[in-house]
Image 1 (cartoon, rainbow, N blue to C red):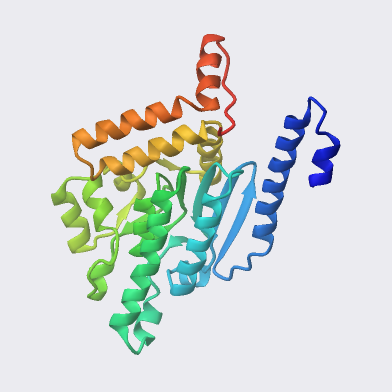
Image 2 (tube, one colour):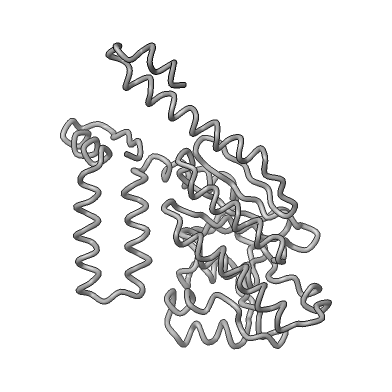
Length: 294
């Protein structure tokens, strides 16, 4: 590679060639990294800058176990670091999105308190990674989203659900205190409504979830709706989107003065990007901007 660059060192196209080679190597490395992944409980697909994580335990309604937790976390981290991925979609294979924690494994565990601690930690790692990721994560809810599955839905940035999707916090139905989800649900609706859903563990449908503000859109054709949303997101400026997502998350726990300062800092930082220059230039020239994430 050094020899190749040396040959073109006197050429005016050196910078362009270097950039092309670096980008090609990054794309190749990302592609090869996914080729070497051998997941058992999930599948990962990348096409046109859109990554899809498919929860793949359909015989168990894609229930959450330690293996799925580890693999989902690994995939989320890899996609977060892949500059060629701009949007991540999480969906379930078969009839469900995720039916919650694997109750059969809970029952079989010799040390149930230890097992539940490890299982909740596995779920929490995935939730944190979704929220930390500087790109939109969309939940494509194709069926049941119970317990830990409902918590994954709450952690995502957008939620698209089919009309017959079902939701339930579920935990108390098996005598278990909620291991996840209570942080987001109390920030998504009035406290009394959250109490009703969590304490009674009542099942509610997609339209009810939409009415409560938990779902962005209820659809007949889930794949078409996801393609529409993901295609919109991938055209947006990645740096600005990542900063905006960070601000929204920080805003849930920040005080006003510190948050205003954080907004000022991120606005200033993004104003130094090539994407900002392209955005204002395109606005003045009355054309659509083409963002590169720089």
